[in-house]
Image (tube, rainbow, N blue to C red; front, side, top):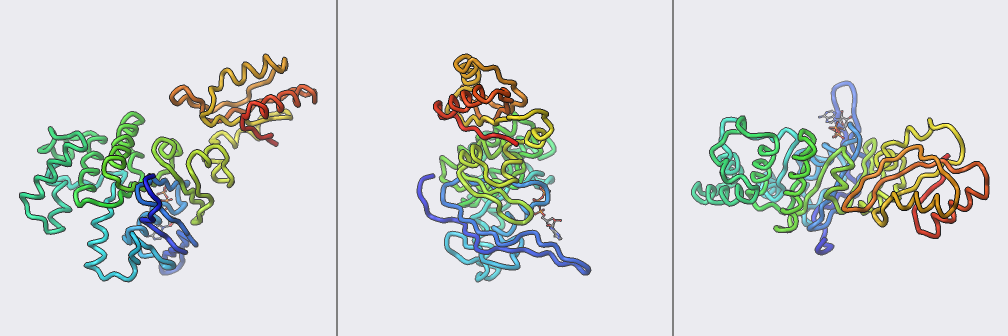
Length: 335
Ligand SMILES: Nc1ncnc2c1ncn2[C@@H]1O[C@H](COP(=O)(O)OP(=O)(O)OP(=O)(O)O)[C@@H](O)[C@H]1O
């Protein structure tokens, strides 16, 4: 993050949908500040309120309570024309790409520029530059039906960049893509963030997406923010129940393991996990039972968690706990 200037501030945001016979509180008391140049993640389970939140950020949905400030401007105070202008500074990409099927790639990218009243020749020049940014210069004339999912999302990203936005909102932008394509789209977003300093706000239900590109994350649960923090901090020491559920996707199984003295070891990238367990067993001369492991090797470092069952004898247990403590390995006893 290059500096700490707020770009999006949500103050006491609430959103209630009212229909004839009932109302749904989709958001309640959301307070959130996103800074310029961040890649900020918003994660939650289905129905938590993520899409509503992102639509409140650009006022596609008007909050029923609270205020949205975009680079200090209170969006509620703007007339339609002013709001349209601010929205041009907030590009958006979607899970289903939302490209115009009757237009080729170049014309899809030109579309927001046409709406903004940019002369055609200038718009086409800009669109060609953007095709290059997203690595699809050779697809200018291709129609969406002739493109793969990843290519469609690249065109949608180019379109979102057309009006030189300050922020790009990504609503489940990689949820329809396979893991390899997901990684390439996330890398493209990372490059765009770095090269152009554009703030990226990522809405997702997948922790792996957050892990891959975000600096900070807000976890939304049942219309509320449950937790906000640096991704690494939330990943290593999740506080709320929902954060634990998302980070330790295997947690629900832990209760079902039989036996006492379970201990969760958390790998936070400072170490490689194999020597940790092997060295611990060798040094403590106490065998442990690995009950569950969900670890990832990222650049030779271990991330994730492992649940081990400690021996029944107290001395053996204490020896292991001491080993973990001395070696500064994060762990917690699991009930
Ligand atoms: N236009 C609407 N009218 C009535 N209720 C709505 C409307 N839009 C959303 N909701 C309700 O608001 C709640 C939050 O929905 P939202 O789409 O924001 O969740 P989400 O976290 O994005 O879920 P998903 O990941 O499944 O898309 C849900 O209970 C949903 O049914």
